[in-house]
Length: 218
Image 1 (cartoon, rainbow, N blue to C red):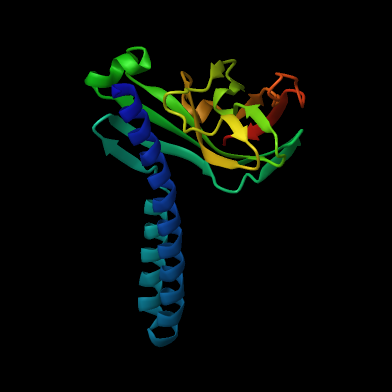
Image 2 (cartoon, rainbow, N blue to C red):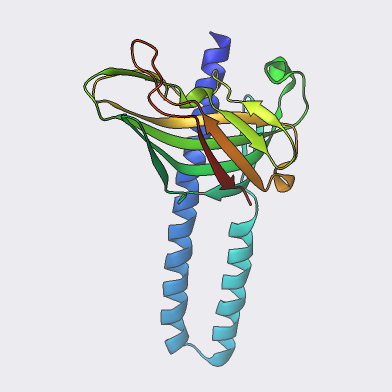
C-alpha cells in the first residue's frame, strides 16, 4: 500500500509540473504584449528598462523548475510536450505525446524504494493506447524497456507508472505516464529508445512485432 500511495503521489506531481509550465508560457506571452503597448507611451529610457526587465524575467522562467514533496526533491531538466509520435500495432493505435527528464533526490524515509540511492534520474513518457477492435487485446506499454545513449537498459517502473496497459476489452482507450529510473544524469541522456512488445489476443497470438522508436531527450 505504501508503494501504491507513493507511486500515485509522484505521478500526480509530474502531471502538475506540466500544468505549471503551460501557465508560465501564458504569463510570458502576456508580459510581452504589455511591454509592447507600454513602449508606445513611454520615453526611450523607460522602454529600455522594460526590455531589461523582460529579459531578466525570461531568464528566470528558463531556470530549472524545482518541486519538493514529502518523498523528495525533483528538478526538471528537459520537457517536450509535442512529440506527436504515433503508430499502429495490429488493432492498437499507440501514441507517445510527451517526454520529461528530471533529477530526483528521495528523502531518507523512501530511499529503500530507489535502491538506497541518494540521487537518480526520472524519464517520464505520456502515452496513449487505443484498441480499435471489438476483441479483447493485451498490450503493456507500462512494461516497456528503455535503452539510453549512456548504455543503460531500464525496465519501466510498474509501481510508479500509471495503469496504461493490460487488457483492452473491446474499443477502449488508456492514457497516462510511464516512468523509468536511470542512473546517468539527465544532461548526459540525450537520446533513448522506447521499446514495447507488440499486442496479443486472448489466445496469446502476437498481432504486431515489437515496437522501437528513437526519442531525443535534449
